[in-house]
Image (cartoon, rainbow, N blue to C red; front, side, top):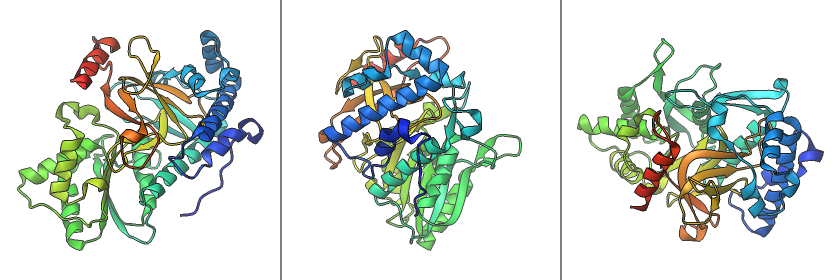
Length: 390
C-alpha cells in the first residue's frame, strides 16, 4: 500500500505539526514525544487563532494564548470546544475553496455534527489509521477478503462519516466481495438486511476465505440474534477473519449488551478468536483512530492526548477518576477542532495497567451524559458515574 506524500498547508507555521504526524509508530511514547506534541499543539492553536474569529474570541474569553503552551499541563488547560457546538455551527480555519471533504455524524435523531476537512486534515487522519492497522498486522495486500459492512450503503454524493470510514477500511486487503447490510430503501432511508448478512456469512464460511466485518455493534448483535433465532449452526470463519466495530449503538441503546457479551457471542457464532474482535472509538468531530488492543483497551496514539474533566467543575482530573472525555490533537487545520470536549464519560488509566505491551495510557468509556430533553447533563452524568463505580 503506497503512501501519498502529504504536506501541511504552511510548512513554516506548522513544521512541528508535520513532524508529529510523520511519526510511524502509533504508540511511541516518552518525554521527547510529549515535548513535540506540546510544540505542535501551540502551532495548531496559533493557526486557528489567526484564521478563525470564533476561536480567537474563545481564547480571549478564557484568557489563554497559544504562547502559554509550554508543557503537558498547559495542554490540559487549553480551552476546548464542545462537540455539540459543531451540530449548530460551521466554523472554518481555511478558505471554503480549500475544503476537500465534508462529513456528518451518524446520529439517529436531532441535529448532526458537520465537519469540514482540507486535503491535509483528511489525509493525515487516513494515514494515522493506516499506521494503526499496520501496527496490528491488519494490512494484508496478498490476502483477498470478503467484507460485510454493517454500515450505511451510500451514494457518491453522501458524506456520512462512519460509512466513509468503513469503506476506507476495505483498502487494507483486496476485496473479493463487499456487502452493505444497511441497504438504501429508495425513499431516502436505509433498512437492515439481516437475511442478506446471514446468507453472505454462511456462504463465505463454506468458501473458507478471510472475512472482515466492519460497522456498528448494534447490527452485529442483531445478526447474531437472528442466527440464534433461526437455529443456524455456529459458523467457522477463516481464522484470520477480523471484526472491527465502531460508531456505538446509536438509536438502539435499549438493546445494547456489554462488549464482553457481544464478543463472546460473536466468537461462539462466527468462530472468531477474541483477539480478532476489536472496537474503535472516534467521532466526526475528532476522527483520531482509538483502536482496541488485544485486551480491548483504547490506548492513546502518539498524535493525540486524552484528558478527563470533572463532570461538574470541568477541572482536569488524573488517572482513575471518571469524568468527561477531553480529546486533543494538533493535526487538524481546517477547523478549530484540535481541543474537543465530548459528552462521553470515561476514565483514563496508565498504560502499564493493561499488560498488552502498549505503554501509552488507555481510557475506558462508561457512557454518555445528558441525552434527553428534560434531563440535565449533570444529572445524567451523576447517574452514569454512580453506575461506573458500582
